[in-house]
Length: 215
Image 1 (cartoon, rainbow, N blue to C red):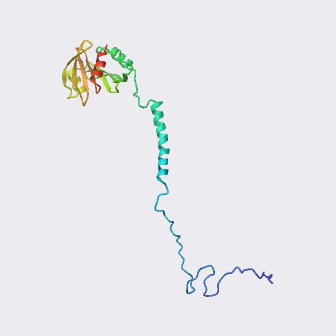
Image 2: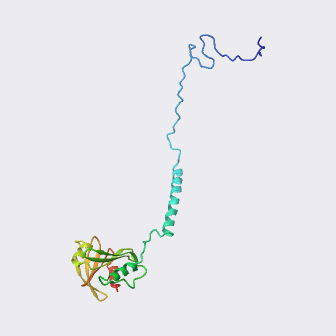
């Protein structure tokens, strides 16, 4: 015999009478189970961005501040805007040791002149000594000394645009003023054993200062 059940206990079997829907399923008007849609409703999407212009400006500022700090460090401490300077002495000494043409070097230039390149090399027909400078105004000038024949050297260095513009006296020597490629101009010293070219986009007075400093 089973023990008696409490009077208020709800039976575990909730099976409804025949023809009736389950108690926890909503019924339709005729008593049949109501149709249910298992697909959840789509989430509502707001038509406006949740980020205000102020928020976007702050985000942009957060990105720009580190970049500005890095740029200031690069320029202020690492010299990012300054040209890399070189010592031209080894190239000059190499050219003098080769003893294929007389070698001159600038003397007496101010510290605002920066040597940025220096190279001596043998080439077809002779040898070249090239010294590159940054002028006090920040323009580029190249000093070339070579024993390559002038009729080959000048077209190669000044291109077909290089045309003589007349003589000029500098430090007791007669130089020839030439036009060159683009907006460049050149001073050319023709000697029996070498040709000297001072060429660049610097002003005329800076070209003359460099040419006149050669000793």
